[in-house]
Image (cartoon, rainbow, N blue to C red; front, side):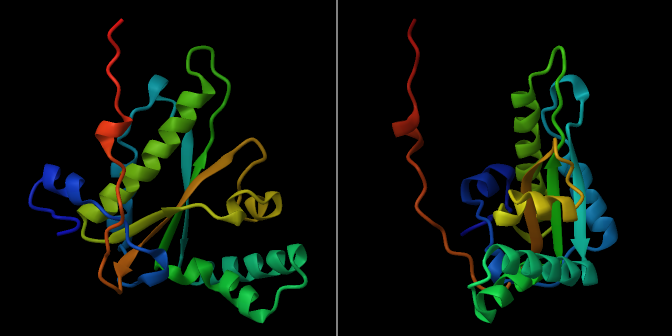
Length: 193
């Protein structure tokens, strides 16, 4: 059984993200989303810098973002037809709530930027776990808009920041299917000095 919530160990052994393409409502209420963001923030954070922040896309704001994405896609790919543009326009509508995690790493005398960026990644994963702990489905994605300077600006991402991920939160409309997993033993060595 995927996402077995009978114990923490059972859940981690069976954890599976849902596909944002097969997600609908309900999504989290304002109080539930607040809980999810608080839980997501309980991660390793060397120096207690909180080198990340959240941008939430809900309701009609998702459609407005989709319109901006479609316009930008047409600028970048004027030869693409309405089918592709419509697909891009609908991307933010895949789930009732989309949370962008922005890595706001900065130079620090004691905490390397790399560790701050890893902390932002941990926030993304913890957000998946938090949403799933509350009974929702979630998926962590990035896409072209995370790397396009114009779209990053539209979404309020500063030039020195990076998008660590878009977390789609809702309810799966199709049964989850597992995928092949790496063999941890094959990826493990033991250093003997």
